[in-house]
Length: 273
Image (cartoon, rainbow, N blue to C red; front, top):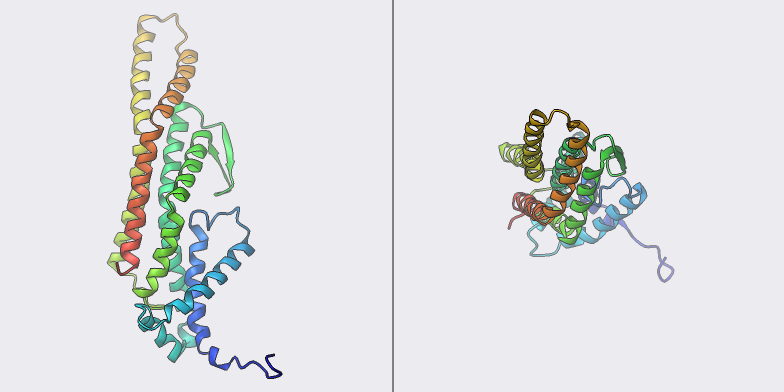
């Protein structure tokens, strides 16, 4: 009530369909995105964040002269057709999911590299719970994941990810994403970065363990009285830890390069510039 008169919300009703599509596109990023899509964040907090961001972003999209205005205004004027509602909502969710999941792939690549290292060092059975994926992971794998997540936040990856999502409203109409060859190429390229990063992270240790295994083989042939299994197992862990400490700066640089390349690919695909 204002001055004894009822508030007239009728002028806002045409904006509800367009605002809901903006909300669904924002909601998609809260499924798999680093930090925002974490399982440790309560669902209620995610809902409040998505709704709050939608209230902040939607007026900006309708500003005169905004690149997104001509893509949002048609939905405000014509509304949504009931028969295409499910498809339109699914497309909006897909855009947010692709951006969020694509940004999380370098973190998954680091974890894959850590699992390879755990298996080669004999630490695969020493599992710890990763609340992000609700599963048991190795010690090195969990360390690499926490390191990757920390670097992602320090680099401002969450801000770049949200900026790409907001910029997508200027390039992709509401409900207008086409699953063409360009989107498939983007997804294939991003998936390739996971395995590439995993091998680059674990490569130095794999080479060193290979050389150590060959050396232990020569020792076993020349000194058969020595218990190679017990000595080799402890030596492998010791050498692996020393190598991890020595190559931590290099691994961080490789991960930063992968994160920047992934976020740049997402930004170029979903925004105008």
